[in-house]
Length: 175
Image (tube, rainbow, N blue to C red; front, side, top):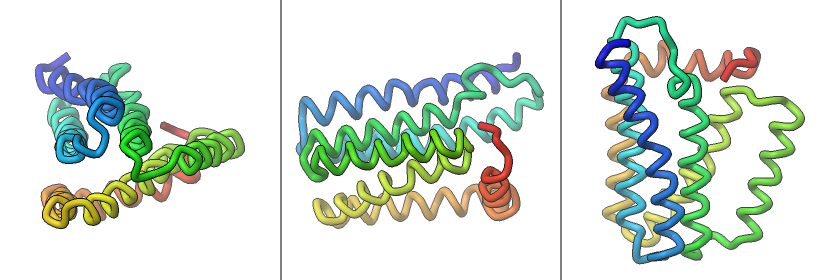
């Protein structure tokens, strides 16, 4: 295994720590931890972009356990962000539970399609961005700027590879 692949796996695995930190932050600091929660989310997104770039540059066809479970870690971060928002009170507990139950039913009905795993995350991130704008306009703007920056940096991979893989994820039952 190459050094680049090892670094990619470390970046991917670090999102487990981010997920645990987000949940703890909601419990320990509540709304006062919003800035730190935002920075953890930005780190998570950055590590997600970088781990893919590094894994592809490693020219190794070996896919590690961590690499195969990248999407699960991404979903765990989103779920932990939902826990953070629930614990810090912008989103009430019943709404969070309903959201999770709906997704359990969706996955039970259709199986775990990678595209569904990605869609699972989108409303949580959207809720976070909306609440961030309500809480701190500058911080919300920073998140949107960062998302645009990710698309620009990953261009043309985004329209040529990411979007087609997402769409084909509805027909392929691969994670």
